[in-house]
Image 1 (cartoon, rainbow, N blue to C red):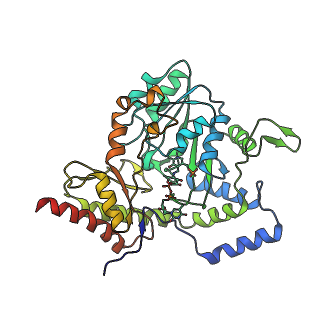
Image 2 (cartoon, helix red, strand yellow):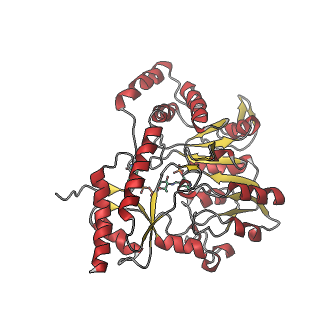
Image 3 (tube, helix red, strand yellow):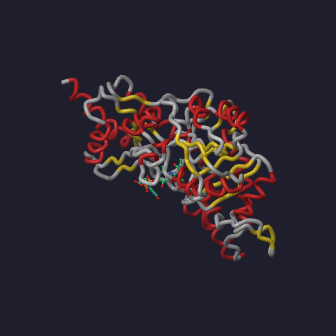
Length: 376
Ligand code: T4K
């Protein structure tokens, strides 16, 4: 029988509800709700261990963390970034009065193309903000080389890269800072949440001041900091989620494989390459809808929607096409051909740990049906 229940691009994983009760009792008993309480401290420590990094600062969300990361490194002037991301990447620059300079992406990885970065550097450039798009690691070595030659900071928007390792090492250990998102739609969620990974204790300390209004102690304010703190309830959720994230990623991998098997040989539908030497998190399942397919990307998106399957065009429109950015010289379409193509071809299909075989079949059925019509 046809299942009409909406199937969304994602559905958050949640720990067993009863596991939250002891944490709630702890919070209710000690009355510490926020400002670096015991659960916050425990989550920070356990998260750093899990991720294989030394210094983590928890945040209320990734966007505030990105804004703070730029302030912590005193970034000024122009920042090189990608147009192929969620708006928060570039918004964090505008919130700091910085000018985004868009550089095109590599058409295979969807990440900032290192070949094109140097041509965009001017005397005003102080930093690069790349995104590990869909959890695909950026070319961190080449980006670092360019940054070193030109004296630039590198802040990775690692919102998609929870748990991703390259050559057995966390991808979050690259650049000056990496910023994570624990939003409901992410591989690892605390409902809302985020974190900055720092390479040293001194930088973490500055970030911790900045996320708490700039307070260094009861009477000393060192900077115009913001309120970016994660509270005890969200930290409790984070601690519980850590117990299940490995299994969640395993389930995502199985769904990813199941889709790939079904789409092999389907004309006009291309799955993305699985990155090599990478422990991936399978955070998204993007496909390219090519001209060989009977429907355009948007027609397929609408056909799926008609059948209750809510895929998403991450990332369309490009950030550089939005009204607050499109006046910038670097936002010109001619400057961004690969990003423009990706924005027109990519469709992210539903993927989440509790997705059933029947759900996968339901999505695939729409894609296959549309493909067979072509062959008739
Ligand atoms: N940098 C990058 C590269 C990012 O991708 C993001 C966020 C950020 C920075 C900023 O991180 P945060 O400040 O948010 O921590 C979603 C998310 O809101 C956003 O966090 C995420 N990227 C972006 C890629 O996707 P929307 O507008 O697509 O979300 P929404 O509400 O339409 O959710 C998608 C589907 O998920 C819904 O149709 C149903 C399902 N869903 C969603 C929520 C919120 C649930 O089942 N339960 C839920 O609670 O932006």
